Image (tube, rainbow, N blue to C red; front, side):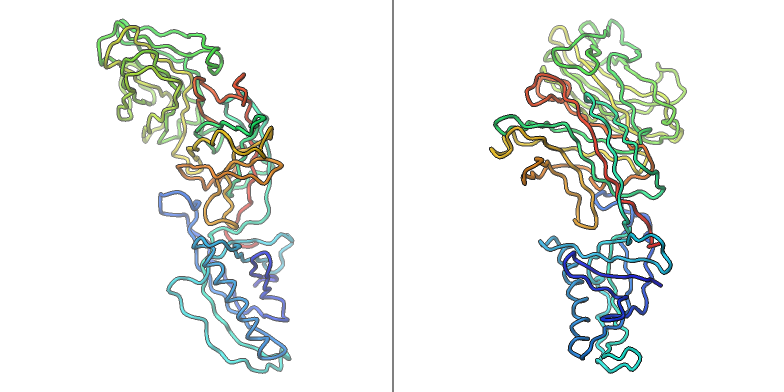
Length: 469
């Protein structure tokens, strides 16, 4: 049983355990299973259906009917919220009998279960026990989010020059993953209200799932007549000041050079890794590139690879590339890039600044591609601090809210994205990477384009449970 059970939209609250307007008969919350659907957007747990049985009470029959109707109207509102109408979310809050935690366990309702039975049509009769009119055993089947949320915790990682694996040490390390709000901090607007935040990849998950490497630090298996050198590129603000430059001017077309890096020990348990890199072509020669990863084989032997990708024949600004995903049943200790020139126009060089390896076999790893913001936001946003935010709050919005927030103003800009933004992570610490090039620069720049921007991260985690406790 429950010592407290209520349904509320934040303004109207009906407490089904108050013994004045309602008496709870039965509520047995369903434990949500893990979601079978591989498509993202709704978190790792299935939505579930619950059955509520309660009595509606009133000093008069009219008041008893009105109290029964209040529950029904909130459930109608919950369905409208789930359909995307502009109404407040409706939640169910519960405290188990004998609970010592005064924090209620809260889950968003989706309205009555589709296809479920209608409410029982019962008369209002006088009850000697309650000394009120009573509508007995009103039974409602309703849908709700799979997790109950009970409080939150937050922590920050200090700003650092991007890209970097920011480690956010959370106050606790729960075994059950909870929905996250992630705030990228450190951005500002200029005196004209211009933000100029580039498109980026945002990586979120356990710290051990990420390996960020420097291009100039690659080990090599070079094609005949190829050369590779660490090349200073402070002018384009390369990460760590230099890039790895591969020269295939004298190499037979189609011959591949392998650049590879040793992975951290945690990747020995990975069965799928995603590979991202930043590159720049310096002439109009076209190239092919593919990712490769393996475990305990000689670098000269081919491991598992991604499909070929073609880099067009044109000199380019620094560019972020999703190279692909490599799978293996035995894990990985080494990964890298196979690069070949497919046409010739002179010096024929390609630069690699950074490469990111991501353990995407971990279900709590997220990669979200964020679109850029418009250059000028508003004259009301002059010289303001701004944040880029991915907010997964399943009890207030049907879908995650991805936006740019101009602090100390009411200006909020929606930000386009692709990928699963329903960030839900357990444990601690949590790793975060902001990965983006910026016009002619390898790294995201400050608003004056005078230096690489220091970017921080703040995470708020909603603590989650399968049932109220």
